[in-house]
Length: 352
Image (cartoon, rainbow, N blue to C red):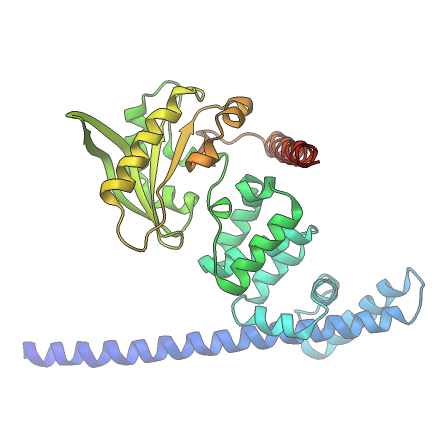
C-alpha cells in the first residue's frame, strides 16, 4: 500500500510539473505577443499624430481610440494604456529592439522602463534586469531605491557608461563599476541607536538573504570572520563573498565610523593574501569593499584606492528622505565627473 502511495505521488508530481511548465510557456508567449501588439498600436498612433502639427490632435486621437476599443474589447484600453503604447513606440522606434526585449522582459517591465526619461539610465535598468532576471516588483524597487545613481558607473563619463553597457549587452562582460554601489541600504537590519561592528556583522548574517539582494544576485557568501595568518599573526576578514560573473573573491571590511587612511593598508594586506593563497586558476584578482558609516571623498581620491582594487561605500541603517538622498547622489555624481574631467585636462596638458 505504501509503495502504491509513493507511485501515486510520483506520477501526480510529474503531471503537476507538466501543467505548471505549460502554463509558464503560455504566459510567456502571451506576454511577448502583448508587448508586440502594444508597440504596434503605439506606432500607429504615432503615425496618425505626425500627420498634423496640432498639439491637441494627439489627445483627441487617443481619447477617441480609447472609447472605441473599450466598447469593442472591454477594459484594458484606457487613455493611460494608449499613452504607454505611444511612449513605447517613441522610446523603441525599431521593431527589432522590441522583438529582442519581449523575449526577456514582460509588458509590465517595459511600462516601468519607458517611464525613465534618461536614455543611459533606461538602458542600465534594461540590461541589469535581463542579467539578474528581476521580477516586475524587483525592478520597481530598484528604480525607487535609485540603484543606478548608487552604482559607481553612474559617476563615469557618459561615453564610458555607454561602452560598458554595450559590452554587457553584446558580450555579457560586466564591469565592477556596475556591481558595486554607494551607499548601501541596510535598513532591514533593524539596527538603532548604538551598535558595535560585531552587532552589525551578526545582523548581516541573520539577514543574509536580504543583504545579498541589496548587493546583487551574483554574490555568493563564503565565510564570516575568515581567519588568515601572516608571519604568525592572525587577522580576520569580516565577510568574504564570491561574485560569479566577475569571477573573483570580494572581501568586505565593516567599519562603524568614517573612513580613515589606515583602512587601506589593512584591506591591501587581505587582498594580497587572498591573491597568493586563495585564488584559483581562471579567477580575477580579489576586490576589497570597505563599508563605512561615512567617508571623505578627498581621502579616497588621494589614496587612489581603485588602483589597489579597493572600493569604499557608505551604508545606511535608516533610509533618508528620498529628496535628500536624490540631492546627495546627484552631488556625488557631479563631483566625480568634474574630478574625472579635471584629471583628463591635466593629463592632456602634460602630454602637450
